[in-house]
Length: 197
View (cartoon, rainbow, N blue to C red):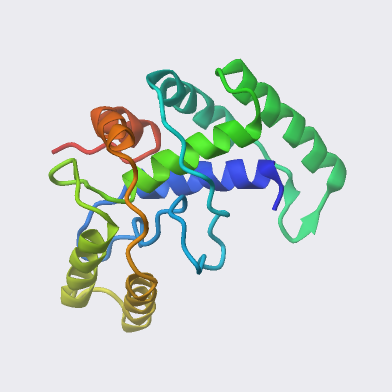
């Protein structure tokens, strides 16, 4: 997976993670924090990155780069275009550098670290509880949802149970939890999940 596809994929996954509302029929938004070191990485998830010590400047840079990166395209997924991907890679590199990062890899490590923390923040309390309690809460909500189509419900339940079976990922550092929690409203709003509670 190229750094560009990893960055763009993380941008879209970040939107899902930050926008999760634990309600019946909700998308499997917080099913798997991508930055957590694990033996198994679900199909389609970005490759996990290393946790870094986040700074406010990096959070601000992520927020500024996110909308620009989401607009990039490396060509159609079914017909890869090396020229288009190379051009998009260069554009992505320029975007992250313009927003305070030395490289796409540094940007991705910061993004993965934020995602790992967001994957454990309860959107209702806006505090870090870890991904397992959130998955259990989401599983109960989906199982109780009478309006969800049976096939969709079975798929969602299966995915959540697989995520739970993978085990609790390593807990992010307290400093990263504090910084992401402090910026939760901004991160959530910028990534498409503005919480109005």
